[in-house]
Length: 178
Image (cartoon, rainbow, N blue to C red; front, side):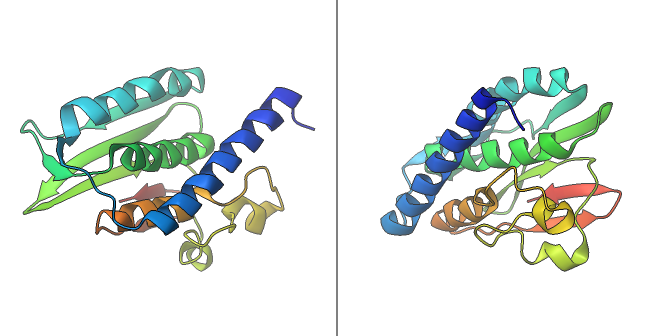
């Protein structure tokens, strides 16, 4: 059994994710004005995750271009997407591994990526990871310690921006969500 404070935190977090998912599905495209994505937002997010990563003996690396990237974003949604992806990646990262938050641009498209060196995701689960309530751990081990809302929420929030989320993963090699 997990400690009560973890259970309460997990419950609150899952509840917030569920409410966010409902909000995104209702709101539709609510993207705000142009905002600088690299210097402020990703640095702030990486800084917030540095200590939890260090506690697990995981190196967190922020890779970004030297030029500023501008995009129309909903800052809270973007922050929630990165939170969910980094939380998932850190949860599966073994000690002495590397977790990478990357930002890049190709033409008029900005790409964010979170890569880990965890166990990877089996090919038969890769198409389902973005389904609401699907959990790779539960499918593989029967462990239902999370609710399977996070990646579905990421997909919806990225969709609000006119984007898409993709998974590249190989068993034993880790995963990249881009």
